[in-house]
Image (cartoon, rainbow over all chains, first blue to last red; front, side, top):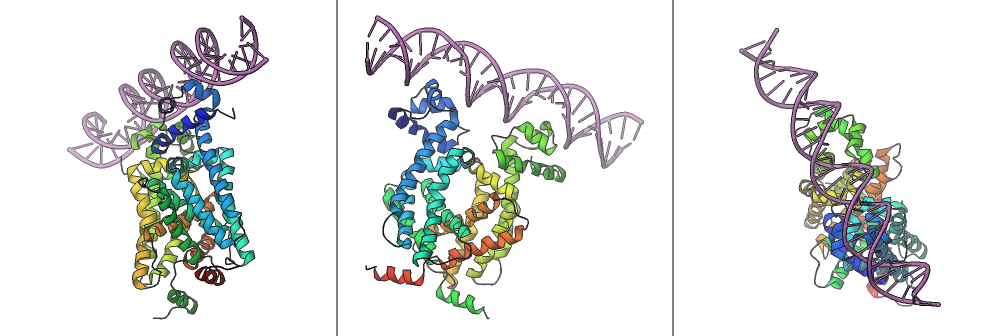
Length: 209
Length: 209
DNA sequence: TGCTGGTTTGTACCGGTAGTACAACATAGG
DNA sequence: CCTATGTTGTACTACCGGTACAAACCAGCA
């Protein structure tokens, strides 16, 4: 069941938009067959039904993300800089594959119930961030926080939801520019925060009227 | 079809865990009937099928969130303080209803395809944050950012994913404490950011070896 | 007490769709 | 030309969501 021929693989991507739009359950196998040009019998020969289709599409996406993030992270820079690179990498891939992202999120429940995808999700999205945060504390480029795993989860959310909103919005003419814009916004938030120095002082002193 | 009796409503919540666990599509109508004790025919008398069940459960949750956040936001404090209150409120509700949250996220695609839920989602989660960010710039308690809507989206993601992870983890003995913990982590991130002042300087000057 | 409207429920049924079975066919490599 | 592996059409099964409907139930009320 593994190792389906390259030609079929590429055809299968034709189903991504369909699934993104209607959800996997709103998409009939026959629709997928028609949209991809692969006859139903052939799909079943290689893949394990509808879930198999989703699993194939998404594990591909997830692998892509984690490898791109992987190279972004493995430089000699400090952790803070590498975090910025990781954010840019992840958003880059997401913006470039809007349909797959939407399919992923729309059928998140199903995806997390497919064991292979669940771990791929974790390693693609969460692990690198958590790792980076820890390294940042070690090399002094990022702040020590009270609850590292909760913060890592939040950072993960900040990045992913931003990427998702980019994927849902009208697919723009220039994906790279979009990715850069969002990546700047996310980094601005995650690194510097939103408080003004004034409000920061107020809070440290306890506010008075 | 609106206005189903209070008794049935409370029984219906018995289906939340089921749906959270298996997803709506992995849950048969007959399972729901059995779990809630409401016979299938009665469900169909009041509700519009499976989607109706989901819609009922989630619109309730969403209303709750937006009203709680609503009161948290309508104080005389500065926007920064109100943002903290809003985060706490949202996380409080989420932690208190883990099954509903999981159901929501697991069937996000379906939820967003139900028009009523889509707008409820938007008003419950995104709008108050976006609003608050704008007000914070106005009253000087929050920083002006380059791309406010992208940042608002990120903040929304940071909060929501944190809440979700709390909902997925083993439901703890003390939900209120959990909520407080996560809310502190999220605020720490969103307000102050992760950069150390050292790394901030490095970046402003351009780093040198 | 009986009438009337809404609700509740059991049961039987229909239609659509995922998945399977299988046989015919294609293709390639030896 | 033969065999192994892939490809495809067709027919079929099983299951499940949703509907139909009739019988019962349960007010309130004249």
